[in-house]
Length: 313
Image (cartoon, rainbow, N blue to C red):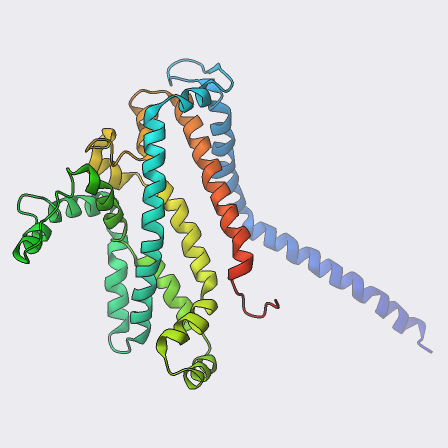
């Protein structure tokens, strides 16, 4: 039978553990406090203010006037909003899957490189460090119909070189092409997933199937689905927020013929050209809701195609 000293020691042990747990939790909150403050100040507060300002008529100078849903009703009657929304949706549908496929191909190639691997990874990441404005200007020079090297090469090969920047049927494709320029982040994410595939799994797959295509479809792709999900969500969010490239190439009017007029350009035009802050806030609110719904839809479908290690199905 335990004496009183052992019983007292057994009773104090859980209390010590609870005390240590509370101290650890306080330390965790303390370390996370700067991030929490930044989240509240720079994300939650502006988000709430945007929702509120969207219900007002606010011209920067003077006090805002409450107008309820009038800004949203005006959006429904604004042809520029519909044109830009259609262009932005088409841009997202075209650019996101092409970007994912190209980044995956690059990652597969880099994963097989053994010599100068760091050099090649740096080369593919460097375009991401270039300012978006500079990248757009470089593309305009490369694709110029008068003396641009791309059209000169196409002409020398016997192809009819398109007018990339002034043909309405091609201009949106030029923006899509420009979005493929900085593939570094997506490629590195895929590369990290490929290099985390266990070696014994790869060897077993090589013994089971000699065809590389089968190993890619049935082994490699399922094991990197979390990375595909991450790149897909980030790609959707960033594609609907394309702004710098669109305004550099098409200006605030989306030339030629509004074919490059993106939703963010119309939002910028409303806020900083016409100083209609309430209307711009309503546009931002709608964009937030659309992107949120698309992201939730992707996460909802992810349950059926994303595989996590150790997860049972």
